[in-house]
Amino acid sequence: MGATERVLYTPEEIAKMEIRNSVNAGLKDVQNNDRYGFNEVFDELENRYQRSER
Image 1 (cartoon, rainbow, N blue to C red):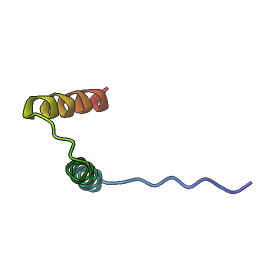
Image 2 (cartoon, rainbow, N blue to C red):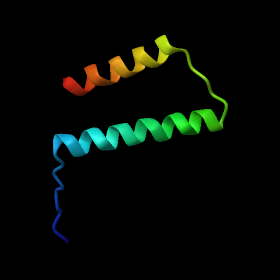
Image 3 (cartoon, one colour):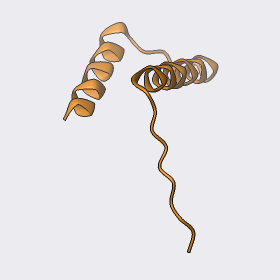
């Protein structure tokens, strides 16, 4: 069996990855003509960060 390597990211790298993922998801939504209201998007982001703080 091979050894498992663990990759550690800095907080800045994690933030960049989250932003990139959010932008890519948003672009995909626009491409698919899926539009969301500001409150719906803000609530989802708020819920996501609350879950990540636990």
